[in-house]
Length: 329
Image 1 (cartoon, rainbow, N blue to C red):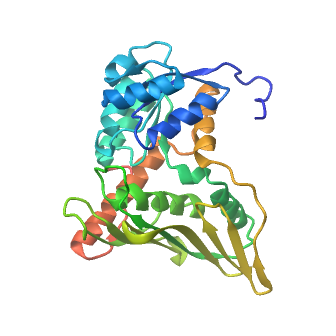
Image 2 (image 1 turned 90 degrees about the horizontal axis):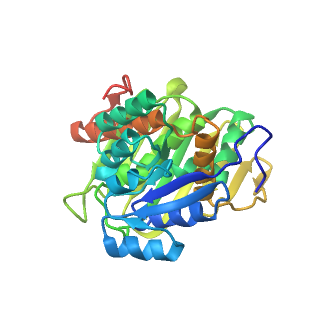
């Protein structure tokens, strides 16, 4: 790891992870290995799970977030709880004066998300949202291609996020669990907000959660983003295609491999695979230690969640929905 430039903080940030299930354990693993972070504790409402993870990493465990948040040496937390209680725990952490990285979808509603954004601003605390694909090296390579004009004028993004029902238990459907990644990435790659949303979202395997979603986001200048996500496919697929006037770029999110198709052939630049979660958490720690704005702010999380809500409205009404003020739920 490259040391920080002169003048930047060399101290370690005291961190803890709240929610150490399927994804939270990965947070624990990465933070325990990061030289500029000191993992101080873990928390989970399942005591057996909390104890197991704590013993594996040699830290104390808690079953109530309120007890963990009383520790003064815990300066920041990452929150990987059930989606419907993310905002509740994040609010507790911000109120306790802790910097927060909260996993997507950030909150159960954009109204809750807006409350978190306002609270973090009032308290002068870092609030980051866990959209891990923004830290995917393949995504940022394609973003560079777009910014350098190597694809020509970009007219369309097309993404597919497909798999069977996840083994982990869930409390939100495929739209807010999977498609929300590509909703956020469409804004990130095109650098602007969509003007309208059209969607079809439905339930086949279960009646309590949506398991397939098709979205079309319309952007200024006629550009579009087409997003497909489901928990119905017999195979796992994570891919993005960017269509430009001079070339087409495709990305496998999992392998980070990029292919660039031009008239004179297909090019596959050799690039090194890097774990996006490691880049994301290192960035969060750096932002807290050096008072920097996170790449994925609370506002970004709020906007992505609001767009998902508009997609659900579109599906319910069977018509496109114009996008208004995305910061006003």
